[in-house]
Length: 173
Image 1 (cartoon, rainbow, N blue to C red):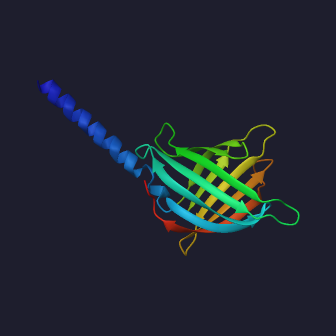
Image 2: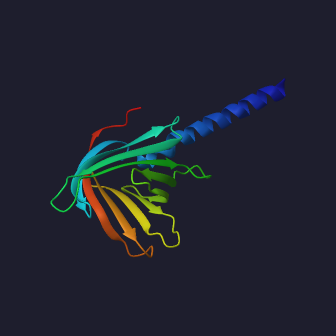
Image 3: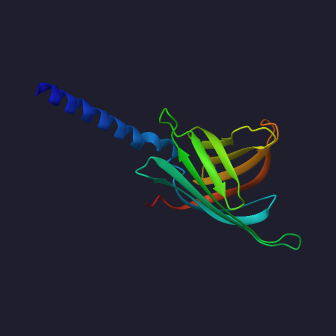
């Protein structure tokens, strides 16, 4: 009987500990979670769009969805870009991995580093494929600067598109 009580107490401590870790998994992301709108420019031209970051699957993963429109010009047709990214914890429980898909057929695996005001996604280096870097930086006026860069050597990056966004709503589940 005593062993059942000890086992039950130990089990509850483990469950409470794990649940506490899950809740804090996304603490470093809190400033980025929500709905955002913005505009920017780059190689596709000048455009606007929106993105969301929200937790899913009982806060086990973070989902980012993004939509961008670049109007047609005299030299280019309209460009519409939609993508989905799933951010997930590695074996240590820290959310430092992501997988990205878009309507152009790209799939990118990312490793993630972050500080208090910056989150950087860097793609895995693969032979004959550029390295991609996506950076979110919190600005002083509660806006976010988003920069997507490309590098052939993984060291010298060129900006492909960059823009500023404003949060319009906190996370909604």
